[in-house]
Length: 371
Ligand code: DCP
Ligand code: MG
Image (cartoon, rainbow, N blue to C red; front, side, top):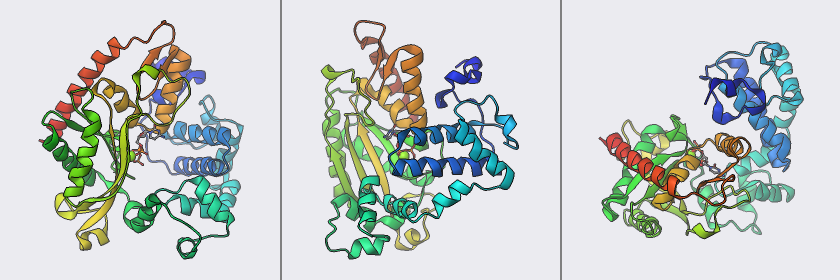
């Protein structure tokens, strides 16, 4: 995108970020403070300030220079009065009174702890908090609490899945998924997406898109992969969601956080022997394996490019890219398609060609990576 856009305050979005992040202490302090504030509002279900602090954190992340005085941030977008006052306090004293108050707040600490369990969202965490529960042992000792299957797995594998997944582990899982796909259909492919596709060295899970060049075959593909992982004895948890994708109902005008493609949220057992340089966990190494969270999504091949774009993230980037498409280009973007609102009908033909090319490229890249 043209540099002009990057400098234009009204249209700055994370999807136009220019800067190369550098390690700067104060900036990281401010960024962390904004994240805490965003999370505090998320727990209180106040969306406006939550998004505002997330955007402010995203702007700071994009800076290629250190923030030493407030004046230097003049002209930067997405920094409102509240963000600036937090920033000023940190620049002057190295801390923020408001953030410290939140961090020492019992409710915040408890919700943070409870939501760190796979399968526990802010609503459940709040419910448990209101019942006077404050720790994992409180929850596990409370006979009236019924944990669903996902939460049971979340507690069972808590130590492993709250530890970051390394790039070497992601690569090993890529090989496992790829082998499973190719054993089912020789022309199928698995592409690494999410944070690792953006070049991150560590992630909280590993995300893959699996598909075949044959439209309609992708639904069975996922259930076959799950069966194969089960047969290999490495499937520790599986939540499979069948596709509800209906092309005739597109475009969807209401915002949906998730797409309608078949997907599954897994916990897999990753053996030490499959990972170059060992596991990112001392206990895992002595045990010989660790548990890892893995997400798989399986779109029809003609929707591949949009899924790849949507699942690559980051969340803030996706949010801003959609906002940019809507406000700047009068288009609707989601994980299923891109629609031109200025035209009468959806022009599916063009995206389809783009997608086939994108799919071919990704498949070749995955071959190369393996090599
Ligand atoms: N995604 C999204 N909206 C959601 C969920 C996911 O846009 N509600 C997209 C953006 C994410 C990607 O899917 O980047 C993968 O989701 P993750 O939660 O796995 O996020 P990341 O892979 O980016 O981060 P992490 O390293 O923590 O796994
Ligand atoms: Mg991820």
